[in-house]
Length: 431
Image (cartoon, rainbow, N blue to C red; front, side, top):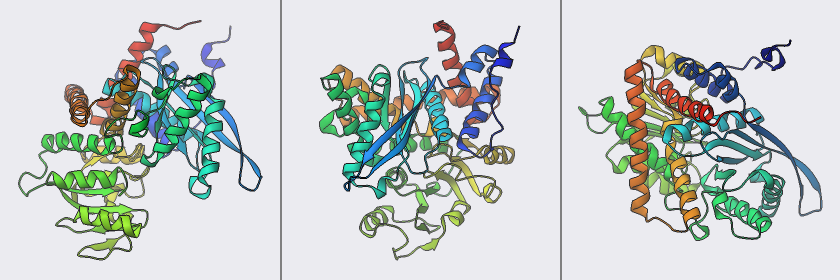
């Protein structure tokens, strides 16, 4: 009789610095330490469902192009799938698999009753008109109509500017359902049932986690506020820089796609972000600071480094030159597996993305709850609840880290993987 293991395709060799390889290595380590049942381990290594869709779109000149689209639904043990819609000309299925997995572990760690998902359309959103973009999004959503919904799969925004995209998703589903279905998406405009702080929830969450981390690692107590370098000056990095400066942190480095600014005694963040809004980038700004490259900024000395822009910001290329005392992942997969191992050997703590980026997921959960219950919380309510969720998650992770003598990343994944595994075990396998 053929063994089950012989009937299953094995996982192919993975590039150690691809986001999917990073996510899987984190899961593998946690599953081993948590002594997950071999059968459950096999289940969690694979997404529940991967859906490929063709998205035909007609432009203003009548030309039709068929775009590729996917939705990866990783695990629904704890509740409906939930995850972002990505619009990117470089979109790869493996990256969506990684993101869906991270969403599963993040929701489980934070105590949010969702499973992980991620999807997207392969297109360059900056090279198409709003009309073409809207047609592509609506066709993609219509193709997935039978497998998405408030109780099935909830869409979240990938970027703050996706507010209108979330409105299109909600309207498309609502038209098919013949009634307003606002709980199918989060990150909507307030007038469509959105929640307060969805635009800066990631930055607010990072600020809260950074406060816990700085206290635990005793950063900045002897020489004023902790110094921080932030990669990214948009809705996550820019908002975080502003919030930290208001809390008396010294933001000494800030970058965007055009380059980086550095001053060892601190940048005037509010003024720089205002001027960047006019100029469109940091490279054209002049003032009492040094212009440098993003790569150079990342390896400058600081108390805390927060890469908020891209996966693999810290990798084998630069990790040996890093001089930060603490790294906090402000982007999914910002630290590659190779870089994470190097930092671990050097004793540099890393706060993982599934904890540090929890603000966006928790705020999305609040919005889903509000939509389903038909009311809206006030601004102070959102921040207080966000603080409580993240504080409880931080305490759990630190407890496991100290109890098992493992890094924060490993501890966070042990908590998450154990919860999902237990939920799957109690639900059983339907056949």
